[in-house]
Image 1: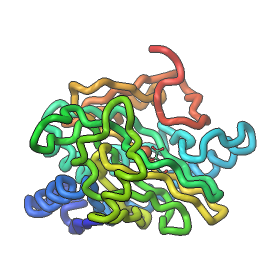
Image 2: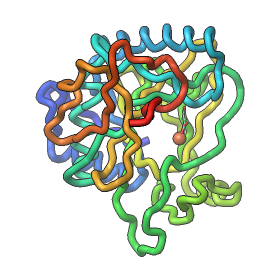
Image 3: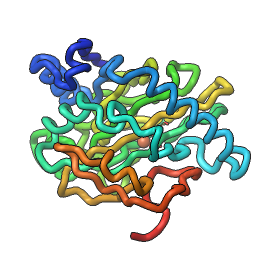
Image 4: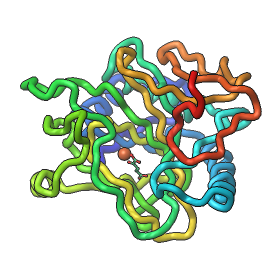
Length: 278
Ligand SMILES: O=C(O)CCC(=O)C(=O)O
Ligand SMILES: [Fe+2]
């Protein structure tokens, strides 16, 4: 995974040096993925991580696990809302450069790898929009993945195939590549794993093929999946608690949050789509 190191000064100012921004953009264009290490305050990750591990236990006890990959929703209310997580300025800058003006934060969910030895089927989270172009169009959906625990191959580091965001065979009707397609990519660009430390952030073009992996430890692995997308793309929306409206205001990103009465009913599995009709 290409890594772009950001200095303490850039993190404090919330502004990337032009050469680092270029390097991150080039990595996403080439591989569909870039790792920005240590750009989030670890105390924030630990506070949210502790809460989410508690919540995951509650959901597991009261509702059971329905799907090993779909996360237990994060608590979108204070004191768990952190700007350097939801609107990390490095992730915003990269997404803005790649997708242009009018981008929207359209999901603020999570993937939890609970435990066990199943592997998720290989898929892309979104399809190609223009499969007949002879160049690779920019992404229309980007996911910001932030794991709340250190992640390695034993606790479900996501597997991904770099470069597959350029493959035009993924259509809206079928986001799962065949075994032959996977073998073809494996021969030219073998899969890698998203191994990260607390405080790291991964920007991923959602056309990249990937899959959830087994978690061989007995500690679940919560990983935030925050989606930034083009303003013209269809919106799903996400629930946040009334009172947090100001937090979700951002000069570059619009939001599709649906603010619901406190206390928010969020202890559910599933991505962050609204539970009720708007
Ligand atoms: O949990 C993971 O590592 C990946 C899950 C995933 O890709 C998904 O549910 O779409
Ligand atoms: Fe996925």
